[in-house]
Image (cartoon, rainbow, N blue to C red):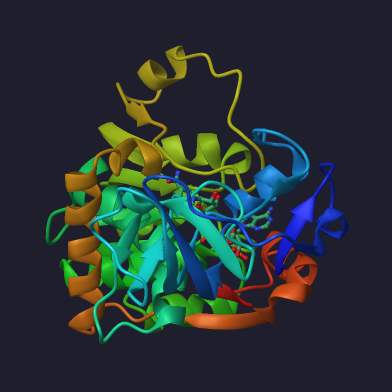
Length: 325
Ligand SMILES: NC(=O)c1ccc[n+]([C@@H]2O[C@H](COP(=O)([O-])OP(=O)(O)OC[C@H]3O[C@@H](n4cnc5c(N)ncnc54)[C@H](OP(=O)(O)O)[C@@H]3O)[C@@H](O)[C@H]2O)c1
């Protein structure tokens, strides 16, 4: 038997229970990973609460982790038992001592990257890779707006933008988070609880506004973000923290300056093995060079996952959070 978090109905954090389940066996093309650390991501709140559908219930939760391969299925040639690996887009169920996943979703981790760092940065770091390097490839000297800058994705974005010579304006909910974002390379912050985001962006850019906004907040910031853009600017809406953006009349893009909008996901960018490996390569380079450090500011035992979800959903966390099996 092995321990795993399961839920049989969608709802609040208390639907998550730690259960003893039979040890899963890898099938053809699959590996089993004995997790050493598990990444916590906002998307799991969407699955748990029913915002995103799960394939079936009861279900496991979590798609990210890092650990040691402890069994391999038939036809697996790239990995051996004992390999140190990380993964970010596995089938739901990484909130567990052991997880079975397609080998193609895993990547070997360099010796200088520890398990907690890998678990904390795979999904969030690959997300920042595609946002800053692919969706809108930022250029040195540009000023950009990035919401939730002191969060898990946000603190990695602050560091990556700084390394690229980009001036990142980050939104945050208070002075401590503002300091954290600045310490991680943000060029300026806006405390959205006290300041008007559009006016502050206007001041900070001397009226130019920004060519791109990265918005994971969703419903609450949709129009504000559009108002921060230059003519023909790009709105990158990549999350739903306050609820999904829906019911949009696309005429608004015309009214606000012939704008572009995209709603990307990691799955749409890391969609082939070569693309996934190239993105991981860049991320590991940033980690190994020290340009990006994982900020694991919360650690929870796997059994206390409900507390971890409460903290993340209520904005109490900063940087990344890992679960420890
Ligand atoms: N599309 C993709 O490929 C992709 C991949 C990864 C993550 N994401 C999205 O990126 C976002 C960040 O993910 P994360 O795991 O790194 O989480 P996170 O940023 O660590 O946590 C969410 C943050 O959102 C901010 N926030 C703003 N309004 C909020 C509200 N009403 N309630 C709660 N928090 C609020 C909070 O920071 P303040 O206190 O400073 O406001 C909070 O810390 C999520 O929306 C996630 O779904 C998308």
